[in-house]
Length: 209
Image (cartoon, rainbow, N blue to C red; front, side, top):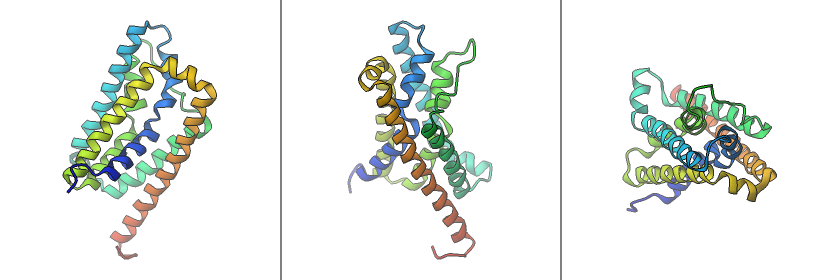
């Protein structure tokens, strides 16, 4: 048996990449840190990445306990998550992903960069669903862990070198990547909603498993 399920790893990575949308964080990060020095920006990128991953991993580990405690079924979470991701996808497609600002006196690396921009509801729901699908298999759990490490690295790199990347991609390039992410995320969200509805129908005995 393979130590890492590469197909599952790729699925987790791609899903989280289009949800988090590292290229789309470039203009937001630059706008929120435009008064910082290079060293302060680097630290803000590191802190934001750490906070985002801490939130995601925390729900990945304790998410099932929270669902059980609150009597929430997985199909219900999947349906709600699909709707939520669809709203995020529509924001990406319509160019409204930047409609968030930092409150005065709040560390922008924590809010809104760390959460909800990076460690947001969409990423949290997606990771919880992947953890459930892994069924505690070592190869799939390893795939999730490596995918999260890869996403963390992408988060940091895109924010840390946002100025350079923005100059290379230019506004049109960043916009194009963001719109493509929106299309992919909308497809993922619709599939999640479809799977949730099918799970409900199976549970009610209306369709065969």
